[in-house]
Length: 190
Image 1 (cartoon, rainbow, N blue to C red):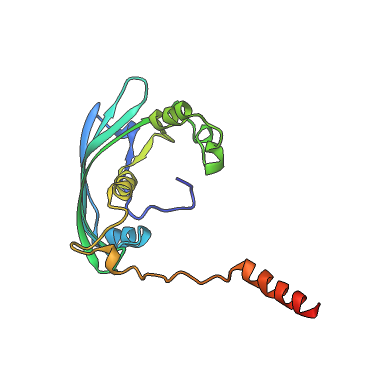
Image 2: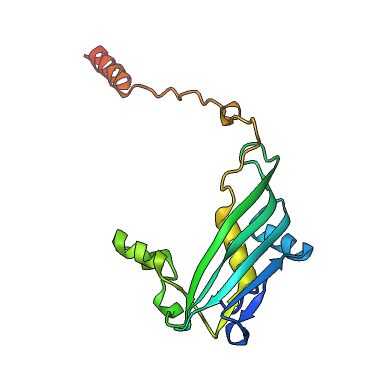
């Protein structure tokens, strides 16, 4: 995450300060944090955002974060803009490694151009960089919420066809009709 951005929901874990190889940490977003995240993700509201995450240290310096995420959110219907409540339950699993640099990861879509499918899949399996021995569990939960929620929420019973206006096909003049008219004019002159 760039230095100039402050996460709305931040729960920093300093890996070197953990006393056990495996630690479980429960995080719960406050009302202000939920409101800020709702604004970030363009949601009507986030009523609840909690996660119970296990941080596990490996001998090679890698860190695994895994555990359940639970959120209760309200989005806007893509058809009517009415509120649509949604419960999001997902399983978080992220591997961090001090052996991966942010500089080696693609930062724009242009960086992905020309990569084969195998190379793209390898990028997905690559660990996240563990920078300065810090993991932000709140930001991890926020990112998993963003990818887990319904991207096209629709109010129950709403049929998009009811709201689509039928456009009448535009009558285009036949280009040959103009030529026929021109032909008639030319024949009348002779």
